[in-house]
Image (cartoon, rainbow, N blue to C red; front, side):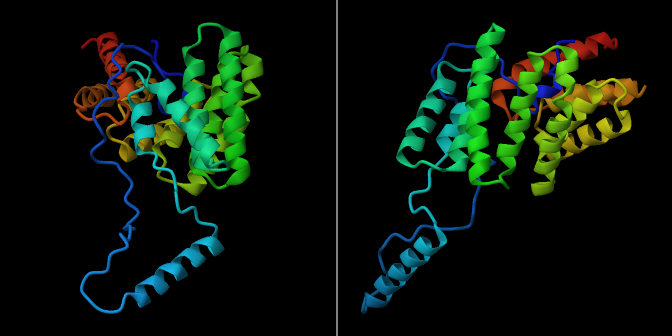
Length: 287
């Protein structure tokens, strides 16, 4: 059918388009930590010394806790990644991460994003050798991230993805040796973040593809992925396949229609292909 393999997890790359426009900013899923930056100005009048002393104490506390006063802002990096199908956005995001790493080395959130981008560059390669070069570079960066922060859910997720991408280049029996490690990575992700839709999707798709896989478990994982990420257009065709595999054509149809109704996809770079997959599957079942 041409649908996503399990190895790519939540959003395998398909590259198209020529525009260098990075696309519109994300509107609804920016992380708000609740912290607000103090601008150094005290409202009102009076002695400023207590505020200076308070700021000094905050600085000392930050040093004791190992906090980075100049934490990177990943909003633009992530936006370029989400619109990676446009122009050279993917390459630009990687270049920026490389510069950020040079300026502030040892940040796991820079490294796993760098690895994520390298995975997508590898997917663009047409030859096995080229793919493996980028996948190996991605694996190296993500391992560095995990060495710095072993409980980083996104690093574990992308490590599982890169293992899957490497498995795609292998023969079937060799690829089977990576199934266990991939499952362990996704289970680790879910132990750290039970609401990680990508990990639920990855597990569901992986189980669905395996000979003799637990179809009920696959269906549960895919249903959970859609529940957690209703705008994940990639999830719906796979869930519909699972329903068809269980003999439930009615739910498969409803699922595919829901995919076609998505207006604000979580992953714009994949949106058109995901919709095409849904349309094709609907045609195959006679609609």
